[in-house]
Image (cartoon, rainbow, N blue to C red):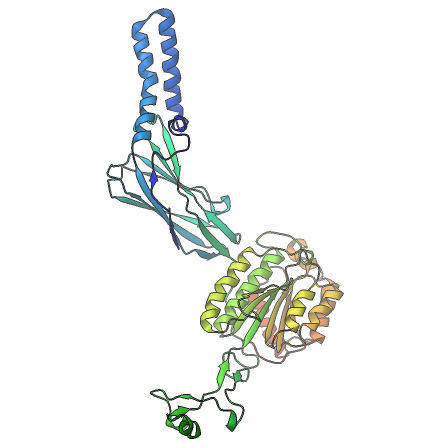
Amino acid sequence: MAAGAPGPVDSRESKGGLRAALGGLTTRGRSFLAAGVAAAVCAYVLGQGDLLRVGLLLAVLPLVCVTVLYRTRYRVAGSRRLAPSRVPAGSEARVHLRTDNVSRLPTGLLMLQDRVPYVLGPRPRFVLDRVEPGGSREVSYRVRSDLRGRYPLGPLQLRLSDPFGMCELTRSFSAYDTLVVVPRTEPLPALRLAGEASGYGDGRQRSLALAGEDDIIPRGYRHGDDLRRVHWRSTARYGELMVRREEQPQRARCTVLLDTRRIAYEGAGPDSAFEWAVSGAASALVHMLERGFAVRLLTDDGRAVPDGSADGFAASAQESAEAAGVMMDSLAVVGHSSGGGLSRAHDVLRGSAEGLLVAFFGDLGPEQAAVAARMRQRSGAAVAFVLSGADWGRAGGAGAPGSGTDDSLRLLREAGWTAVRVPPGAGLAQVWREAGEARSGALPGTTGFSGGWS
């Protein structure tokens, strides 16, 4: 992503004109001015002409530097480019800065400074030597954040100084850029539990273009079509070769449900249960997209991402690629909700088509566990990863697991969910594999699910 200033920055562009330029006097310039005034006053009182000339020289020098620097027409254009503009938490992005001298005069010494949030690192500063007319300079710096979010970069500031260091003028470009830090994702094992996605295996879904011999919807013959598909009755009717439409495979669907209720999680920070759930949801949706599923992200407040279609699913592979970026951007800024229940998410799932449901829950009380259990009614398959606040809130995760979580897991399993407890610090690939083993009956007391996921 690249962004530049709308136009070149003129060294004379400043609110308040020359008076504002006087505010750019450095400590050296102010010292010279004060010393010159003091010497002139003493020379007047003592009647010393030589001292008066020295005082005037000291006082005039910084004023001359301010005037020359203000009236010099430096026109410098700046641009910024992020590579990449979307990075996982803990990864680095490189910011490239470019300055172009678009005036006919060479510049003096320039200091380039970019504003960045403190979580991305220290504020970068660069000193640029004289830039010839029509010349350019390029510099770069790295940013890194362990916290997901959207971070503004800019505005880019340019500081001009005179050769004596008496005055510095700062000009700001107006362009901003945004660095999106998305949750960390973990590669997940491809588990073939029951069927396959994207029109293959037992789990494929097809939409027939005909419902009987009389309901055929033909299309015109195209070069390369099999002549055995020619529909002669329609050919005779339309006077040109017509072929039968093939049945169109539909992409299997998957809903990734993220529980964001504040009361369902304890603790904060990159290693908290909520951040694990967010990272798990991101990893799951990326994995399912790679397996050919049409994926949507759903939160406990009933908001589905992407929301471009009626049911929240992308209609094509190209739309899914675009939706993946939208979902990751949403997970980059998702926070706790103030709601106390899962009823809104249940209403959305109740009105949608069947498909795989992968849920990441925090603490589930008896009432919310019952609501979550009912979400399984229309889903062809349902997998739940439950993060107990009693486990994650305990220092080091030591001690016996909470009995309330056991009751919630049992209720979910009785409703047909494949429910897995997530201990503190567990890897997502590990619990993902446990869900696959639960489907095959490796975990006792776990009810499997119908349908397929990979």
